[in-house]
Length: 107
Image (cartoon, rainbow, N blue to C red; front, side, top):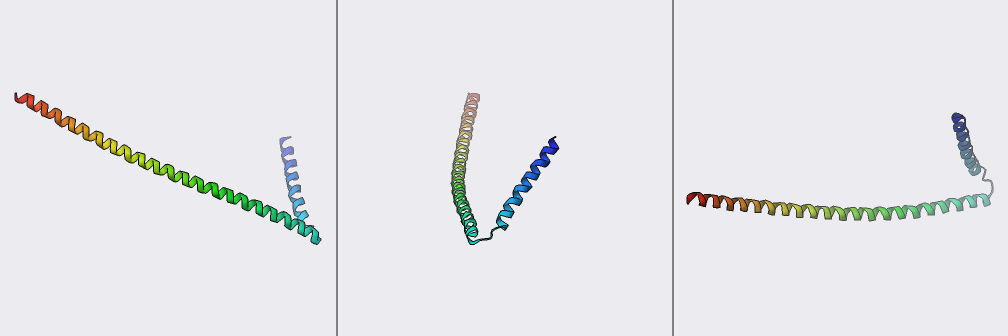
């Protein structure tokens, strides 16, 4: 029954595709051609508007991505600076400790 339903759906889809093609093929008068042209131009305008919206959305997303990447680089640089300062502090403390150890061993 699933195969039968699938075949029936395929027949319906094929029939709908044939009907649309027949509709375009059966344009016989100037009035029908004008209506078809009006419909197609409407679809074209709609597609152009949608394309424009998508393009704008893409540009906004790219700008946002660029901002996030810039912030990420700034945070990485800041983290590297903090890491270097921390390592420097550790080195200074180790040197001070070593000096204290050396001074107490001389006494």
